[in-house]
Image 1 (cartoon, rainbow, N blue to C red):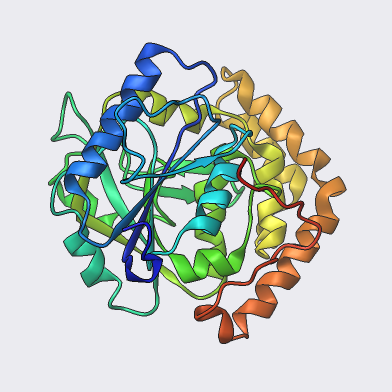
Image 2 (cartoon, rainbow, N blue to C red):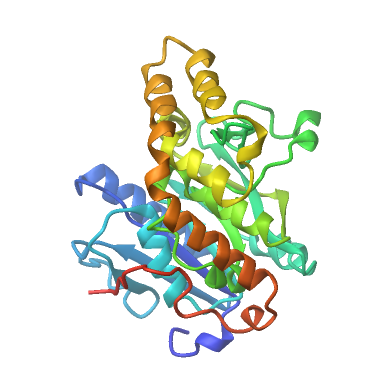
Length: 320
């Protein structure tokens, strides 16, 4: 399978971002990998990006492409995996999330629409599979990342009203040709904001996201997924508003005050708000990325061939 990249329909990416390789963290990764191997489609490439410390004790070298990346950054690992991928569709799944058999069938049907750029599956806790952990992400007028569907019933009517901007980075499905053309985002965004950044890029290029309630994955620790929504990312949020032409909705000071006023008891809100005031120094890189998006939006060739160097000034990161 690895020797026939043109035959792949799916490239399933598992980034391993543990800081300390504890027994629990290794087990979470292996459980995710096992679920992927059990449920993988016939034409699927599996890529695991890790720091080189995992020794493949189960001898899966012939079934998995192991990619070594010294950085533990999720954005950097995803960038590298996209470069090495060959499938039509990229599935990003992080350790702790597990798939069931048959998940690929709704994917093939949804991507029959050429304007569909990404699919948002549902993630439920393994302890309470009738309740949603996350049904995609959104960004409000201040650019703040928000999780959708948290705590809702899996089959409730409210689910039909959800319109996620894109999938969560814990489990998301993307059209590879678009992601490859967009290029490397590791130099532009933080891990916490990667899913929103991808969603905004696809939106800027005229592609839509589709909520796929037929695809349901389980997560062992929903607290880890939801904890990310409480991490500050003010600078990244402010920069994204500029990159995608959304900064005119309100002034930077207004967005800062909005962050601080939402919940005075959460200290990260203050840090999040103050971070917005330092985003000016990165404006040059953001301008380059805006020009890059404008170019590929009006170029048809990228749909068939990914651009090799898509973000000006980005240092090349290669597998060890």
